[in-house]
Image (cartoon, rainbow, N blue to C red; front, side):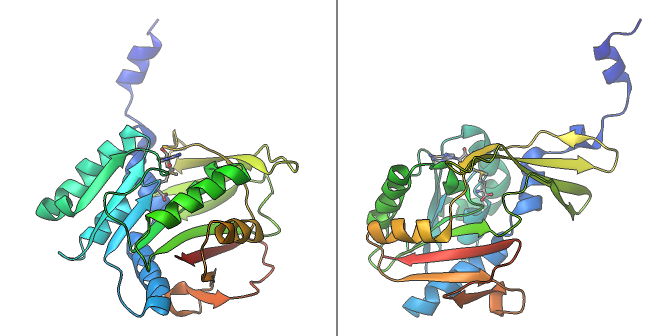
Length: 270
Ligand SMILES: C[S@@+](CC[C@H](N)C(=O)[O-])C[C@H]1O[C@@H](n2cnc3c(N)ncnc32)[C@H](O)[C@@H]1O
């Protein structure tokens, strides 16, 4: 009888086996060009000038930072992540192709609460990664350090999601080129708002890829985050609501809309 190993070796590899999980993740959930336009728009709407230095927190493969420094010699920045695996992948696949330009980006294998080498104009934490901080004290500590680390007229920008469907455990799927992305949030606790999120990538042949990241987090609300940002010392805070009909896909709001699933960005100025 053929062993399992030889049976696997004799068949063609599945699409999942042939895929690169970091590449697939980037394709599925990241849009660096749009994000950069958006954060410059948020920054310019208050500061009336361009930002030049970016810090990407929870940077993973540092895709956004690589696009940032690729804009030209004035653009520089730093990325922070505790996991060496995506950082290494990002150095090879996102930074190395920039050649000399890659020298304007520093990737730190370090906690996001650590200080920058040089204060950033914009500091971003996207795809809700900062939700790993589950207590008020942890989140306040993160926001306080982020504010102190910003340039004098700097901006912290974070995204946030919610809505009447957001606590459902139903899987939600969307098609990306060549595969399907399935989000599923499980184990939501109404007491402490903790939950686990899994992203699964499913291919045409039915094979699935192990997600590069698993999330165990707290589902935060906008008013909780605003209270903490103000407690951390941020003065001017804008809320930008995702709206496909607006310039750059977001409009500034004081009220939001009670949609079943919404995404917003909070831009907090030092
Ligand atoms: C989902 S990935 C984010 C990837 C990408 N930047 C994005 O926006 O989609 C979350 C990353 O946060 C990192 N991470 C979690 N806790 C961290 C911490 N305290 N300091 C730095 N990185 C952290 C993980 O290693 C992981 O690479």
